[in-house]
Image 1: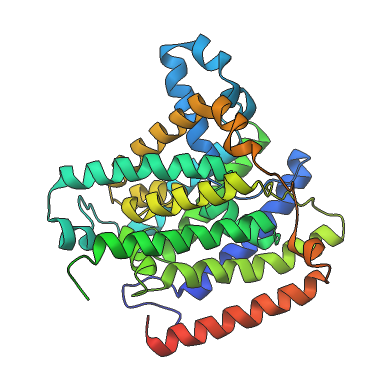
Image 2 (image 1 turned 30 degrees about the vertical axis):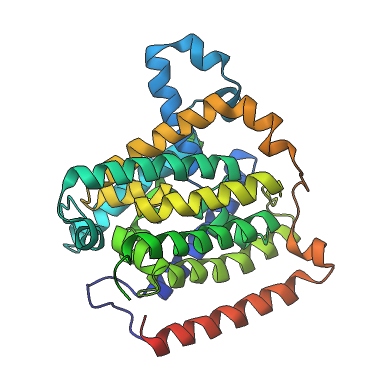
Length: 180
Length: 176
């Protein structure tokens, strides 16, 4: 097994295993310092972030919303985790020179052409559907895929199977049309 | 900043660093996994789960941490999981990786992030409706696989390891 990939990255087995150790350390550290075990996750932060944006326009509207009250619009541990995630990716990509400004990803361009606007519309609409689903399912590939599977949660095992299962069907329909 | 915020920030830097090093932040890697042409993200994800589950379950047994299963709400998981899968294929990012992709310069992730913020806002507005419909269908609560199957968690962990390693071997043989 190679520890480096052709594009200068680390073997996904190695990087993934290290993330497993980080998840273990994080679960313990949050229990000790915050009094409650927190598991890695990402999608709730989008609720809080949009709560902050909406609060800018109407505080009353956010205060009256049951979902914002449930998830609490604050700069909490997970919000900072996501800010850190951005910084970590930036540091890693700048130091190994894999940072690249990209406007349209290659697989998308191959199927839909180099138009940034087409990509923007696709990503935006896909984002709405995906996040709506993630909030309904109460988790994304971080909360269910990593944290939930590590705990052997029934909900997470089923959710991840559906993420990938439906994702594969839809990906085949959109990116493979006219091919194979 | 509070201790919790510092802890989140530092852990997040490590999280983002490892996701980037594993090259799993990219649109092309995520879509390629769904097309079965490059399974990098599955290798990464399963590797972290294999390592993580042993430590998490051991610490839970020792009373050092508390598990937090997400509820097995049938409508929420089945419909929500399917919607996520469909949106994920089009968007090519998941919530965490979109932010990381932005960090490594793939600025088109901003469109995905904007869409996900809109999706979160929409869900917040429709939450009362969801609560009386989809979320009210059937809820089995916070359950773990060992309790449901009535077998030792370590048997499941062993099976999970064996299955994943077989899958890895198959990926490597196929060169994906």
